[in-house]
Image 1 (cartoon, one colour):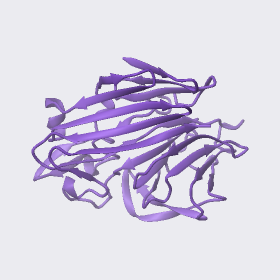
Image 2 (image 1 turned 45 degrees about the horizontal axis):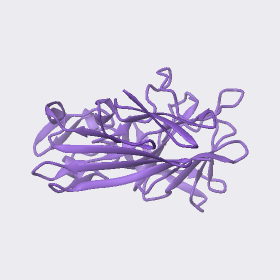
Image 3 (image 1 turned 90 degrees about the horizontal axis):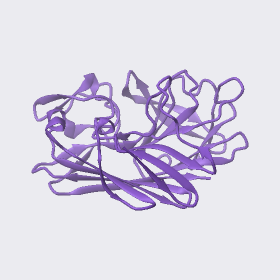
Image 4 (image 1 turned 120 degrees about the horizontal axis):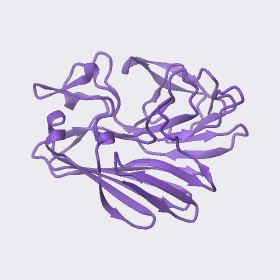
Length: 289
């Protein structure tokens, strides 16, 4: 089922399947990718209880192995509507017999979306309802439309970071797993200049709080969408070597396994833990210029 929210500036549509943001329109302009499977069949999935892939498609917890697909399972589950006003909606997902087969924890996941003038605020609340410590990751994956040039490439667009550094460092990433090495990402006045080869290798993973505000700029270097977050790392992604007409700005509390990781779930890099009865709460916002 789809839910529509409106204020004087924005119109947003969400789906109970995956609690996914499907559309954001301002002044008649659509900002979100339409999930065309020719490039990518999603728009803004919720990444939970994993961000990225686990090595070999399985993770270990207390001596047992569990299968897990990339980015967890919440994006493919049906959420219930936990509350709604004219400008906000909350979705809820609880653990069940199906989830416990692959993720042995009792949890409650709540996603709250709220419109505020020209902003969409997203809040994640994860509650541990188990009698043991719960381990999880959570992240966002919104895909924003980008106007390509006459040759169908990213030329003429920019990504702007709130940094004064002349370059940032991105983790090397091979076959869905993170390596321990990094490569420089050169910036000009805080901007990554996009071209037809920017996403030849897919995702850019930026660790260590290198930025907390990322904007997409047009050819005149005017921002038209900005993502603001306070996560320890984030990703920038568009399908590899396709020059798809969108790119993703992804705040993360978690990431894919390292290529040499063979530890327990509790030892995953950037993983989060919750004691019995405790909740985790975090948010990020999308600003439309």
